[in-house]
Length: 230
Image 1 (tube, rainbow, N blue to C red):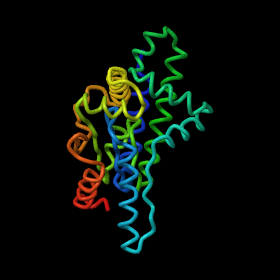
Image 2 (cartoon, rainbow, N blue to C red):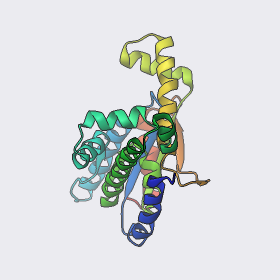
Image 3 (cartoon, helix red, strand yellow):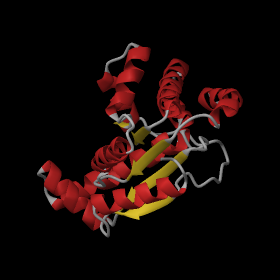
């Protein structure tokens, strides 16, 4: 069966291409489990807005994460929890979903959810002055010229320690959690890739064991200045 979501993406990309050059700026943050994506987004928002205020400009930078699920749930008339469950647990490809469910209606429903998530992220990032965390935003907003795409990673031991502290669970439990979540995130991101694409969707990768959130934010702002995003 033809992949409805990928066909939809292909049809939409031509429509978007003429508008992309005018969109942004946008920063996307993709990350492995245990890496401080939300913390980095909040720090970047604060520093970027402080920079604008010093220049006599209004503070308009914002960051989004759960807002993506809220907006998608409104359009789908579903609870945010249901959409979050889909993103978290149904990260496999749509074809795999179809094979596992043996239900065409299930496949079409999942394709619709991904289409709406795609549109929500695309529209939010096109508005500009947005830092988008996760949800496949790095791939979805990749073709916006005025953009910078980050990937946060770290060794498994470091990530397990972070998750253990944050969730109050044992190291073995945290390790199991990290491995499962990283697989889910990878599958969900890959479901937005164009078939046979060999593109690298991240401009820079940071080892969160080596750099603090503050250090990463300073490097990102410097890169954004060099690329004339700010």
